[in-house]
Length: 114
Length: 112
Image (cartoon, rainbow over all chains, first blue to last red; front, side, top):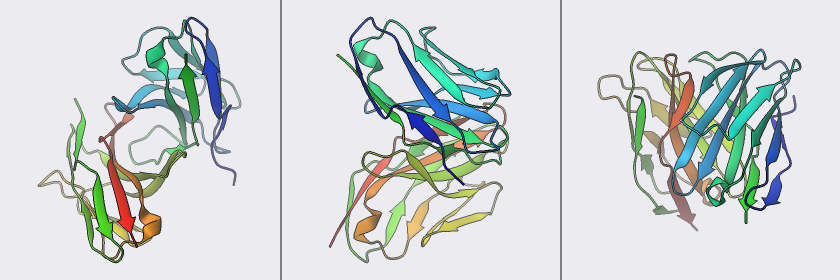
């Protein structure tokens, strides 16, 4: 079974631009979560989608948004990019958003903001 | 809120040495506990997990036991290999928060 895929793997943008990242979950998984990884803040939760609905959101500004499609694929968007948005963005999928379930991670999208 | 405190790194060991990476947590309810590993330039890979007290997770020679009384989930391996060099993350998932909460990560380097 194919794992979680994320595209693109690398992105370079300039301040003020916007960016869209894509995530395809493992087949049959309906929950998709997004995390930001930076050297200073570590791994931080962005949001979680289940059946096209945002079920949970982390402590990030409104410039960070996302959505999920009927096939469970998800996108996240960052508008008005800032230098501090440079990070590895990780997507994870699970069958259901339950505490005993395992989240499987993709390889990430490395975003660099210049 | 939920939190995970992980042993600070970096940790450098010789091949075949014993490994322990300490992890303690604070959470409401009964969280599930995980260890993830990250190799350079890659995402996170699940190493092992435990979903209830006294459960032992194990994989590839690594083990961790869910200790509710000490709120701990320490990672151990009896004999490390050079290929185990990576960053290790302890994490918890609680039903109330509905998200993974990660520790700060421990960089492990194993020398031949």
